[in-house]
Image (tube, one colour):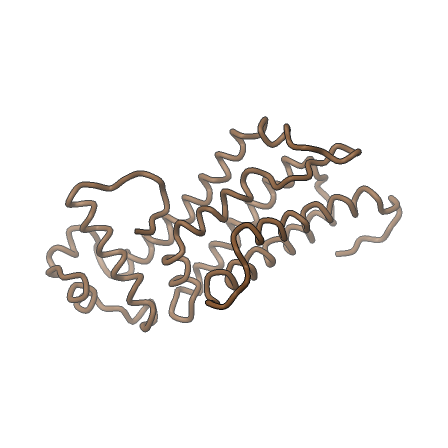
Length: 216
């Protein structure tokens, strides 16, 4: 069962809540997020309406809960990355001191995507909430900025353009990986691609003459 966090849910009450959420997610395969009704969800989940209202005030709270839990889980990954700063600092470095291997948070971010594949597929798919992508973009901007802080990248125009590029690349690769059955992408390949972009951005900053015009 897909879920944002790593805690185990065992009580009957928690299982019922998860069943409601999972049923809502499955309905997004064929139904727009704002067209799912409480009555249909209850029928598919095998519960009565009164049970639904024990957990949620209305149908919109269901998707809000799914989105909020996912964004909170991604933010938690970034918080963990800060705790693993020493581990990241121990990575092999270039001659000018830049870490070569992917940062801890980059790998963990896509591990979380993998663990929540069904929910992300539903939210980013044709019947999902388009506003979720905006929330995810904001979270990704913070995610990339934290990685750049850990890499000691300066706060300049090049960085702003690099953050925007990395966010777009994250989303493009994520969509391809999750939504296309015949994709050749894997989680490991995505991390390698994004790390190559990260490394290239730093190498450009290192090798370009200081008076080179801004590229963004």
